[in-house]
Image (cartoon, rainbow, N blue to C red; front, side, top):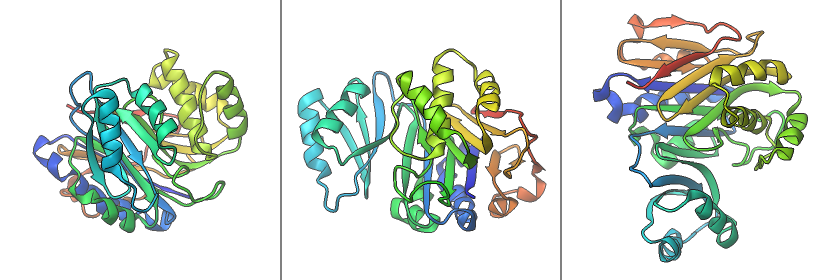
Length: 298
């Protein structure tokens, strides 16, 4: 059992308050996921050719500034936005090259996401603890995806925390359990996908990414998933300009949506909506099984 939350702000004047609105939503899912928590925030994209890399290092006293000097000496200017164990690195170089350099020179540093818009934070601990640690309430942006995890099939580790990412500016959170992640993983590894955890959700994330990069639309990719995934799931996905939600064909895992002229909010349970402005006047509904729901940033 896990908790998912998502929020897309249609009203531009509210976007500086994105994190303020989301933190109570995330904390509202604590009973569904007390082990670890995370949030992917989508902001205005950085100018090309720049990319942002969200990275994590749990080593006490890690010297981020020394790493910044070393990376800047290699590629030119590298901007570091340090936040506790996390850092958002903005570079103009090929992010694949930066990832390879980090793996060789700083193996304790984990790359959590890459893209022009996405910033990703996740860590072990109660949602309130993780939110306080990284100042989630101060985050601004257009939309975000959050998750609280209750570990059932893999250990409580950073690598197994959500959200999961693949490619650029794309993430996924999951409530449910897949029975066939091993067979999916073996198939995808033969096709060149690289795994970083033993969580079933990563198999789902990389499967959908593989289908998308093979040319499928999200709707077609999910139609394949309905046939190839054995298990139950509610998936919430974020892209640079969109949130998308889907439940398995049996709708075994809960989800609820609240929509007003100002926002679209998504959660596993209604209680996470209680603090949102105008929630009494929102259109509230339960998504149907095996149907893709998507909302775009305007």
